[in-house]
Length: 523
Ligand code: DGJ
View 1 (cartoon, rainbow, N blue to C red):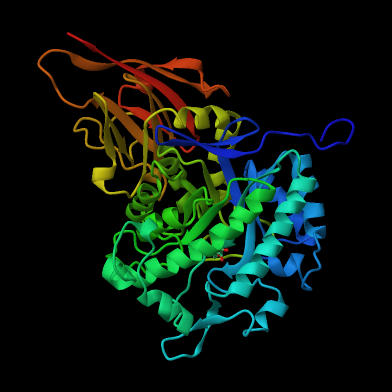
View 2 (view 1 turned 180 degrees about the vertical axis):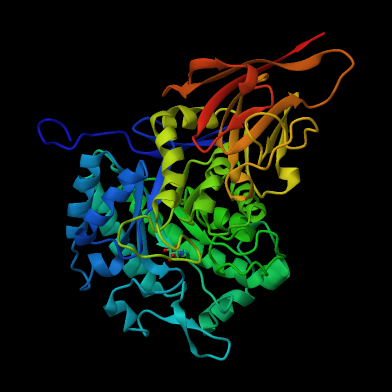
């Protein structure tokens, strides 16, 4: 807001991609979304007083929060935006950006959030059919009236944003939520059966029917195509009013599964059908995994699946238990544009076993510490991450994922060390540190020059060494500096780290720290 009470104009947020690396650009500069997502039913003005304190407690710069179709169009054709009338100014006052989650035709695949006039009318708004011809719970992506009605409401939402959010407090929109279907792979209505038996669209670059082209993955690919086309058309209509970045989140399955066996929602942008989504939904800027796995091997595998030259990595939902906090680092190291633990408000609701049993101070601190540290330099990090190769890891990832060769250098992460000495040292024996058996620790690194790295993390020891011993030059650390990043990505040193602080590697504690490491060689 300006002094005159007018909402300031700003340039539209966008996803920028150069050389296969991405940035979320907000107010004209790269922006790292340090997000939190509110609980599912916190999207009412009366609940907002229990949302904002958590955003502040966690030092988040972005709140992801639902807008439900049932809420804005309770009676067909009559729109009510009183919730957004409350939400937007409150966010603006606090300097918090918003990501709006459109709970429409699909919410965790179900039509739970559609208005009752849609829920009741299964003739006009058909639900899927089972193989046996029975009614299935999910709405069909082949329902033309459902598609038209959802689109009309979504367009009304985007028009509201166009008219009421000139400063782009809302930086992104998520059309629908965890789309697709469970318990069966696709709709079995007569119309869907006909489409399933026909040739796959030429845009997919394959020949034959869906079964011929995709084998065991045919139903997931088919449902993905039609669901993505449905949502792409809705997104396109919304973007025609206000072209904000839009993404679709995925209820993912097993990151190592064979085609059709992943177990994620069939039809959503699970990792196996990202290519189908890319072909079907050109108006969707990115597809993004909701990550509730506590298994670090699976977590980093998902990050690798979704981090692609044609897809900016973003984690719109992750568990809010303390052991998830360390996964921020491998996300950042892969150039992630945003990350958000789910269920972060003071309504007292817990989605355990997915997330925390209770949001006690230790849990909140595990997210708040890295966010508080990164927030002042999030623009600098986002700028560098869009320009330079990166990598990151977390405790629990396989050994093969704990080191990475970057140019001439090898970066290695190790956990459960004190800040001095080495646990396998024969001369200085010690019991393991208290964090050794805790699910904490991780790091992100950007290679900002051939011999220079920016490293950030918590509860980890990082070593940088020569990737390959050579007879000629020997590699060594030239300088380790501790500091911060300015908005333009330049490094501001606070001190040089040396002696005990570097003799046994770069030792990160629970309090995050950012280092610039300059390597070199001597003969
Ligand atoms: C994923 C969904 O996208 C969220 O809205 C929520 O239902 C969580 N699962 C579970 O708490």
